[in-house]
Length: 199
Image (cartoon, rainbow, N blue to C red; front, side):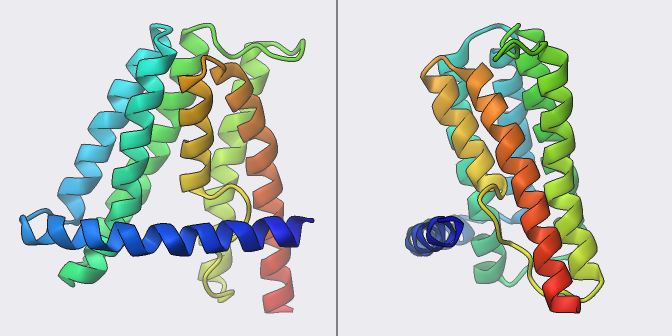
């Protein structure tokens, strides 16, 4: 079942990448670079977190969609413009972690985190740890020589999509709960993939 889900996600990613590459090409011609897209995405993330904190879930969802779009654009833009820098990659990862934190903080401050009888702070702590472990497991595994670990059901794009859709529908609290399960599951997927590859 999970293999089928991964296959469907991979095909969807390939379809999206084709369209995103066309948009990235246009942005590159317009003079946008890796760092400018990263900062723009960060600004949108801050705005979305303020909307979540104020309880404006629909507005937050719309902004998170746009934020996720710029997050997806960054990679293709770098490849097309051939202007990737080591610092640019570090800055992007650095900013993404802060944005992940701000989204969860916004949900907590806005009183949108309690679900299933568990207190909001617990969901937020689980979501934060899961989000960071997804990224950490990939970074540590790749550093150890596992190869590309951009796998699993909850990469950053998927997490942003879940949060955007549930916020638009007024169910950010359930989006947060879903992120908890998806992110921790993905972290273990990447850990097991690393074990298989490294032996």
